Image (cartoon, rainbow, N blue to C red):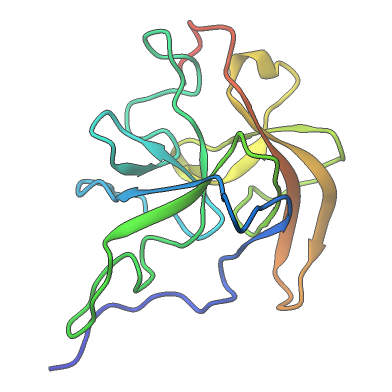
Length: 183
């Protein structure tokens, strides 16, 4: 019996910690993927935990970027995508069933392929997309107090060694201060 699971090529979706990760005490977190998740996060994409402690893409369905009930979910940058074999099993394969992410409050410089295309300038705040761009890094906009900031651009967009565009940023956790803003 042949397997049916087809993960992406290893260079299609990437996340590389350019600096900051401690191999002794890495600031990452792993949790099972929510079974009802419909948008699958790719390696380098943005995810968070739902109320059940399961990984969801972005902030999950029905949750805006602003504070919800006085709290804002912590953003994680996916170390591996949901469709990769170490997260999702296929016939004859074993996996841990856990997706891992770098906690966006860590002192990392991250390079990712998972961002909304555009021009990014150093020191520009970043948030994550909703709906069509859900789980991708994007511009926080001029009024970034309305959205959760998960990073600050460190380098302009460039092509990596696989000819894929990548964006580099420093991770940071700045929750939205305008709690009535829900997209």
